[in-house]
Length: 303
Image (cartoon, rainbow, N blue to C red; front, side, top):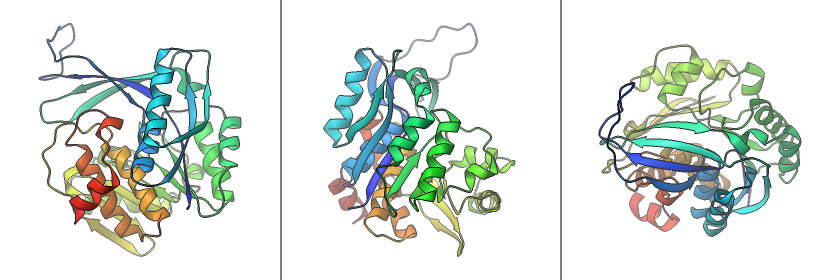
């Protein structure tokens, strides 16, 4: 089985449901505060494991009580955690406000995630062979991400980058990316244009990013599904209608599922359909890791 290594963030998510976002200086009553294990890296690793992949996590937790909570959640999901290090600082956190329509806003504190070094990245990638998969995001230092992508690219590993939170990316970094998976906001930002509203605008953004170096671009468009652009052209994978409760970790679930399907030999468009199904199911439950569906659930849903 192809290995799926996730190099990225591990956070504790502090989640509250709010009727709306508060104005400056305003105190707003909200729902009960919930604590969930999360972080884009941990979410993607758990998604890959729960959906049937050989998933490994590389990253950094702190020296507080949150660290064992995160490691326990990863292991319970079936993730190999031998490449997770501990830093002499606090574990990363994310404060998440969930709006009535299920959409969310997130503020993160990097903490231990900022201690993921280039040396740790090289050590992690050393476990991979040609045809394996490396998943990265941007909640750890950018030079660490670039080092990992370059090392994996040189080993002929399939590299999947979720460019979130969005920041300016150099073209030489994008040249190491096999599959770039921005959402609509990130696609517009990286392409230097407005946020794409439909598949035609998403395709234009995707082609711009391909010209900058990414081999394949998948624009994640929520309920609209996703837009795929590669050397063969563009294609749409339609979304799936579900009752949305909380969109936290939907994009991470998509990426983990995409890697699993491709590791099993699925063609890109079939893998994207599987990923759409997993992401759709994830938004029907609250939380991050706690919202990720099992493989059986996704197979039944798509059937």
